[in-house]
Each structure stands twice: as structure tokens, then as C-alpha cells.
Amino acid sequence: MSAGTAGLRVRLGVLTTVFTSELVDVVIAKHDRAERRRRLLPARLVVYFVLALCLFARESYEEVIQLLTGGISGTRALARVNRSSLSRARARLGTEVMETLFREVAGPLATHDTPGAWWRGLRLLALDGTQFDVPDSMSNGSAFDGPSTTDHTPLGFPQVRAVVLAEIGTHGVLDAAIGGYRDGERALAFSLAAAAGPGDLVIVDRGFWSVEFVDTFAATGTNLLARLQSNHLGTTMRELPDGSCLAVSRPGKGTRLRAKADGRELPEQITFRVITFTTDDGKTLLHLGTTLLDHERHPTMELIALYRQRWEIELAFDEVKNHLGPGGPLRSRTPDGVRQELWAFLAVHHAVRRVAHHAAVHTSEPVVDADRIPYLTCVRIIRRSVIAHLGATAAKLAEAVADTARQARRRLLPPRAGRQCPRAIKKPPRWPVLRIRASRGQADTGRWNWNPSNKHKPRRNAGKAFKATAPSP
Image 1 (cartoon, rainbow, N blue to C red):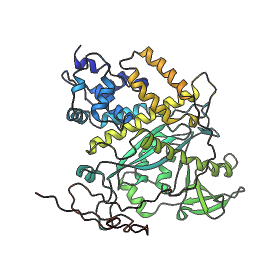
Image 2: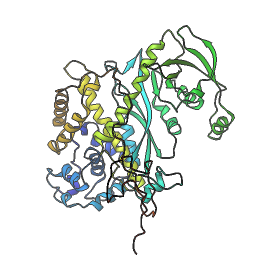
Image 3: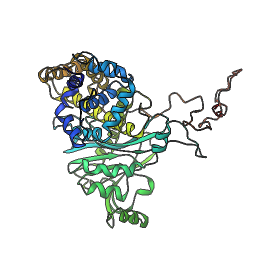
Image 4: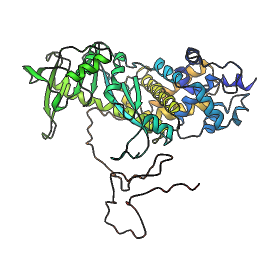
């Protein structure tokens, strides 16, 4: 058996039931990435390799390829593949394959038996954005940009922005949009409207609500619940018996011109319901806007309690970044590699959440909330399965899925509905940020120009401005 043929026998543990070899081959053929000659690293192996890089985010290229192929006969040549060959194989694969693979597996996970996924017949979804640090290379800095000082000196790592639409009950990702640091979350969110539809309730935070945003999602039949800024309350038309009110809002001239330039026509006005309430301590006045206008079918107090469920998407971001990911910058130093890696992370996260939902609902055990299945435990079980089921058959993988569900339910998390945790900085930074962009000769300090500690520190320059010296020729 040749090494190229042996590479086609690579599996990804129990996740192979999600990323089947047939699905991977179809996606590769769709983008014409299939190899035209026998290669040591065929396209299917490279797809599984990129997915495995997300499962083992802290391991090197060489270690990951060893984990994938170490126990398969005929793969001795793959054990000697160096990092540069694997990098070129990733470049040949491109970004579109991983994006299409993500969209093929992404989608709703919750069934009508899934606890916490529904409210009065509506599927609960959350939409929000987050940033991922990427390596500090010139190409990443030029493509994505990042934080900077007031005089436009790069500060910290370049960042890529992702806006995600996910289920609240399962944390399963339905769709995502990726852009640079300067791309607005609201502009990226417009493309996600097609992933929702009638019977869905999308909960969003401040900053998203606008006439354009509401009209885009309402066109698909999606209902919205959002926190409003004080200048987005519209014009009150009628008070409702439950204390809320109906209001209208009209797009401005600049908004109309921008929509017309994009080939879209905005309505003359939108009608929505405004709910005003105070926080539990009675100190802060908050406003919610919703397209659910019937106050009898959708009570005000339930909507107020429901808005707090938006925080579930922040937990999903934490799962991707810290539990599944490296807890720091991504590994790719090129823009195409960053996009490929990020689509792979979203695909693997959704696959892990599918395994967790299966363990919560589709077993002989009593149904439990998917939140009670430990996500990190599922990740660890899946990592072990990659090694334990090298080259496994479909029947053995089906047995492994059932065994994974049993292992994931051994120690359930306690119920956490209604949990509250006030925002606070537990450990503020003590040192200024001294990072510089590659090939740049100047760096300024971050927010903390001086060390806030009063303790005397002899022979130290902590907190002082840092000026990089030019490299010697």
C-alpha cells in the first residue's frame, strides 16, 4: 500500500460521523481541489489535518500528523513529512473548502425535546460578534488590521472579527461571517439573516438595532429581541396595558442613500414594541425592542427574563477560544490561512456540540439540558477517539459514538438557569502593552503608561515607554 493511498484511510475519531469521507470528497470536488496525481498528502487527508489542528490547537504540525497517521499501516513516509510540506498542502487546499464544509455541517441542532431551546413555540437564537487574535505578521496586519494608538501606531495583535448566529439551547452555530478589525458587526450580521426564518427569535445586544437590521431579518420572517440604545426608542404611538408601548422609527436620508447604493429599498417606517424596565438594583434603566407586537401572546416580564439568555453565545465564544482553541492567537501567519483555520474552528465546535446534544437527548437515559453536558469533557473524549480509532470502520465508529455519549453523561454539570454574575475585572493588567507589528520600528505603551503599584522597584523600567531599536544590518 502506497503512502498516498494510506493517507485516504485517515479518520478523525468520532467526528468522522460528522465529517464523513463522502462529504469531504464532495466539497473538495466542488472547489476543484482534488489532486491530479498521486500525492503523499491528498486533499482529503489535508482537510482532516486542518480539522485536527483545531482539536489539538496547542500541538505542532508534526505532532498532529503523527496523531492522525501513526497507527495506520503504510504511513511511515507521512511520519517524515516536514512542516513546510504541510504548510504548502494547506495553501493548496485554500479557504473555500473549509468554509463550504462548515456550511454543510452547520445548522439547527435542537429538536422539540431539547430543554431550553424553545419559548412559546419559537426557537431561541443569539447573534453577536467577537474578535480572534492572529499572529503579528505584515500580511495579517495589512489584511485584518488591529487596535492602534491615537497616532495610528499598531498596538497588540492584529484581529479578525467574526459575527456568529447560534442556538441558545445547544450553542450550535447556524452561520457566521468573518471580516477585519475595522468591519462593523452590524454590517457583517446582514448576511446571517438567511440562516434564520419564521419560528425563530433572534436575541441581540446593543448596537445591532437599526431600521436596516430589522427590515433585513423581518424579510425572512425572523422575530427580533434586542437591547436598545436611548436614541433608538423611536416615536411612541400607543401605550399597551402591560406597560410597554408601540413605536415607529424611520430611516434617515443617509441610510436610504446607502441602502439604495447597495440595491436595497428600505420601508418608510418600522413598527416595534418598546419595553422599559430597571435592573434588579433599581439603578439602571434599560430598554428592549422587539418585533413581537402582541403583548398577550408574548408577555413583557417573560421577554425581560428571556433577554438574559443572550449571554449563552458568550459561553459559546469561550468554548471556541479557550476550551477548544489555544486560548491565544491563532497559528496561521497568512490571511488565507487565518480564514481557513477560523472556518475549521467553527466547524469542529459545531461538531462537538452535536456530540454533546446527542448525549443529552438521543440516548436511552433521561433527557437533560445540553448545558449540563461538559463541553471540555466532550473535547477530551473526542481527542482520545482520534488515537483510539485510527482507520476504524463505520460500524466501530457508530459504537464509539454511543460510548462517547455514555462517557459524556457520567458527570453532569449542575443546572445553571437564572445564574447571574456581575461583570468585574478580576485581575487588571499591571504592565503596558509593548508589542510591535513585525518590521515596524516604533511601539507605544498601552492604556497604562505607568505602573499603578506604589511599591519601590529598584533597577527596573516597568511601566516606562518603550522604543524599539532598529535591527542591525
